[in-house]
Image 1 (cartoon, helix red, strand yellow):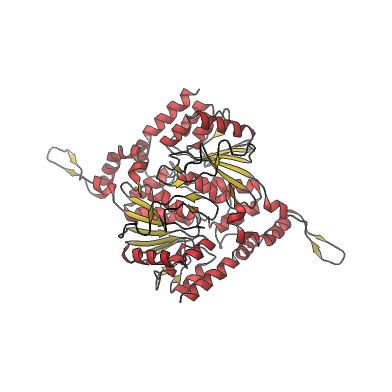
Image 2 (image 1 turned 180 degrees about the vertical axis):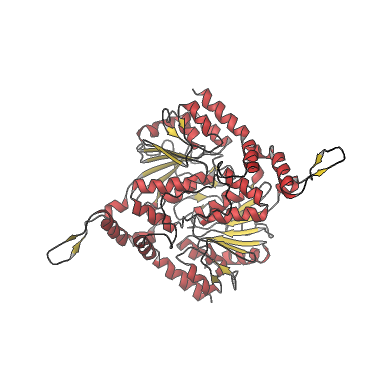
Length: 271
Length: 271
């Protein structure tokens, strides 16, 4: 378990002004007979107590995980659990090895947010792993929000969590979601009831920031956005299938065509 | 050491079309007498062999590291080293624990890219740690590029690597760079000769993508951008000191004021 209080020791001491402003932002300030302002005690609102479980598995794409973790990590009082099958360190597709903080057994049963990152072959393996799917289906049946970024939605789909839901994924395998009964939707972040899915890799930041707004408030999300200086200015303009040059698209579609076909096959085998 | 070939097994097999297009993009195609196109063999250009060292230390902000790692991880043939003082797992400010792949001793002596992430108290500690600074000063004296994201530039400054260089940092401590002899510059990514520094946290993605363009080519960077679907659309508009609402700015400046003062003190104590 990651207790955000650890990270935010220096922030905790300064919580008061944040609470005060939150109070100002949310309710009118009352004046008593002498003209003194009395502000409602909103500190508990800023402290939160969300339980957030982020799945990890071998071959995941670590940016899918860390973009959202960057945002969730700003939630004062929340507990973020990095959950894997065992406590053995988990190695990402690019070789980054992270130590889990919980297992399928020790992960809290009732969650505010259940989340899974994506990847390629590692994700297909996780989406065919019975223990992983059982964990996801169980926690997903009670979680306030069921979420993913990138091809992580293949795992949600394989766990039966997307039947009849609009959802997105990495562009290379979004179409495969249909095989799980989901409605593939082309947008960077898609919310359908309590299922919130993000597009590929870096979409995790937009997803994460949106989640802060939902879990706390717009003001809290804006504070998080400023601290993470999330004012992106990509040096090129090839980040989507709509904007990338033709040769780039053609090559990357071909590069990922093997994965696309396997994702399609997985989804249809579960239908 | 992380060998990107591990990550990219499925991509390796598909390298040929990428090489072919690269050849098309970089040199005119020659035609022989029969009208057949012969393309220069550019496969070695796409394989690369960069040595990239990314510093890790307790209390670092993991998004500062993983944004750039997401981009560097796309470099076919490159070796990305996660370097720490020892091989003991390193825990970030928000409690994410990552296993190093190299130590100051085993990290290659000659690097294409030396990089350091930022953080708050952990960064100040690293910037005052003799072994860390000795490592950074040594590798930085020979590295092709000396780089950082967020408050990581405080470490570069403390290692003496920014004297007379324009550089940026997280907005909360950019001013402190002057104490290290650097020229604080307000931009998301700043390049001065071979020193390339990024602003706070999420600027690491813009920094990283720019680096791919420098290390390989624009085409390669565009391919990386599309695969990572880096087409950002933040749900709010508070990501910089220029755009955030007044109350958000005031609160976050206050929240980080302790850190800002300590960064200033550190920089001036080294002058």
